[in-house]
Structure formats: structure tokens, C-alpha cells
Image (cartoon, rainbow, N blue to C red; front, side):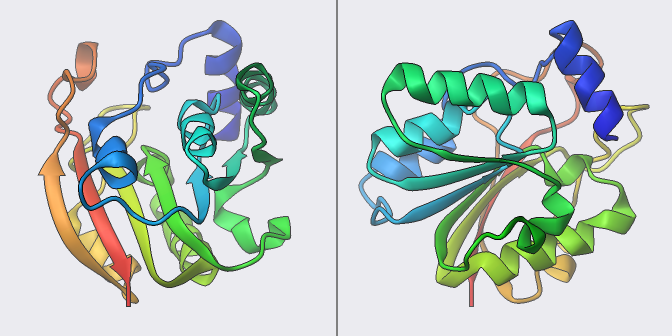
Length: 197
């Protein structure tokens, strides 16, 4: 899978990287019930749009992505914004192998988990759970399950409840943005907010 992502970044075909901050994230960071600033982990951070946004608002952010080109773009973006983001080139299925310390209070995933092969999802969930502080929030966007060729296969609420057994899903809502382009227009992106027990 890493090869496919690398090729897509090389070609400049990154439809998931729209350069916008989803309202679902801004509500958590700036809304009436905003979380207290703390440590944030951006899983599959891509070019760092959300990581930089969080850092600009006082969060201590770590971003992880498996594509070197994406990490370099994120470093450039953080430097241009004048913020510090700890950006790590690494595998989201081995988060604890990256030397990260537990205690993240916000974990964020805009379409990384739902694109992992099924046999690697438990490892990612375990890593997120290990790194999360008690009471941490995980905001995760995933397509509804379905066959889409090489595109992400999606994730269901039931699967999240099974793989993230130490968490509680406190909200589930459809994405508020425009539908994905082309053949993904019926993927039904859905936002899940989980809280670690």
C-alpha cells in the first residue's frame, strides 16, 4: 500500500488532501465545547494541513505519515506558518515503534485507518490506544464499507467498536463537506468521535 501512496504523491494525485480544515475538527478545537489544548497525534498527516492548524492553536502536535514526500511538504508548511510540529516518517501500524510517548489527548485521522488492509487495522488501533491518555478523544473519518477497487474499503461503526474496545463512540455523523470526487461520490464519508475509557 505504501508504494501506491508514494506513486500518488509523485503524480500529484492526492484527492484526500484538499488543504481545508474540516468543520468536524474546528468544532473540537474552537467550538463552544472545545477540548483543552494538549498533545495531538495526526495519523496519516499527509502534507500537514491539520497538524499546522492545531499547532497554530496551541496544540503540541505529532504527525505521522509513511510517505517521505508528504512529510517534507508538511515540514515546509509548518516552517512557512512559523509553528513547530513533530513530523515522523513511519508506519501507522507500528506507532509505538516510532518512539512516541503516551499521553495524547486528541488523536485525529482523516481517512487513514479506513484505507488500511483489514489484517493491519488491529495493530493501528492498539498503537492509538497505547498512546492515548485516559479520556482522550479520537476523531476519525472513514468511508462506509464497500468495494471500490484500489480506493479505501471503508469502515463500519461495528468494526470500530470491535477494534477500539477500550473506547466509546460518542458521536457518528455524515461528513458536512462536498461529496468525494468521481467514483467515490457514493462512499458516504462519516465522522466518528470516540473517547477512551
